[in-house]
Length: 455
Image 1 (cartoon, rainbow, N blue to C red):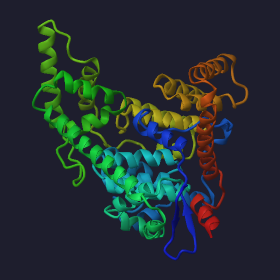
Image 2 (image 1 turned 90 degrees about the vertical axis):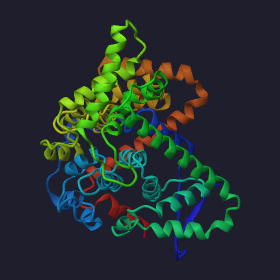
Image 3 (image 1 turned 135 degrees about the horizontal axis):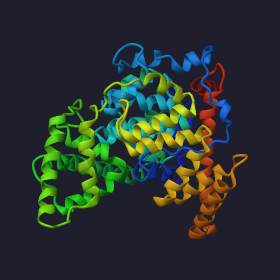
């Protein structure tokens, strides 16, 4: 049975609903595809021109709420400037980006998958307490569900977050969820099992992350062994930016501001390239191709401007967030190439490509379905292809490609998975609807509407 999370005054309750399908989507979102899962929207292309007028536009772009957190670098800091700091893994900026995407405020559109991305970044770089805080926030915002012990564990972690008071100060009713939940322990015997399981898993992953960061830093002074290359290679496709970030920094990821250094990254590059040259001279080819690709990426990163160097991002990010497909595709390209002040990140490039699909870019929708299929995310690939086929006036070649993809997936999975595939599709459609309501919602923003409904 899904737990009821009581508020302090016991007059209202918040029921959290994360079913197995949603958990699988989020898990794949974080660990397989890299990041963001959206959907192909059947919205006409002429509906994506950014709105500039009205109270609603002011509400969704005003930075007043963020200013109350005390986390802005300066008054009126834009979403683009916040993302630029988040690229450098500045914790305050990652928190603001996660909050902006969770609530659809201060220049960020509402999207729980992008919010989950920046939340996962926070945990990956050392702050599991703030990841727990946002898990609770996202449950409240999207009325999701989890085991009672799991809720208690996340609340316990969230209480240790240095950002708890900042989020409380801008309207996150944390105590209504967590204090009421903690008081309800007697009604859920056996909650300790799920609680300990969650905490043990978090601690294990935290140790693994710290060990991984330590390894990348060691490789500034010695060549990687083949065993270490095998551990690293599975992260290269989506997470090369994170690997090189660790190689270029020495700070404690959970406690200190990142100290990215070109000199440290150069040390990593020189040591590994020397080993590669020795192998070539000896006629050996033992070094893993994926690790060789990471060495080349380190060289390319040093040739570009350092991560987070300002470019002309403000207008581009603003228009992309407001749904201009051309701008979204340009952002995706910049992430793919590491140009115009963006970090080079395959995961973020794919993320923005799928945002283009959400805002009616049919090519992006079909490409996303194919990408997910090639990586083994069959439910999600089926959902994307199915939603793509909902669009009108498809050309015969693209339509046939999507139909063939559906047929292959259905042949592999069989009818037993039909309900699960449809459930994944529903999650994507709901995410699209939330975004479009925000995009065309008129004068009342999404959070105001949710708060009025709760009353």
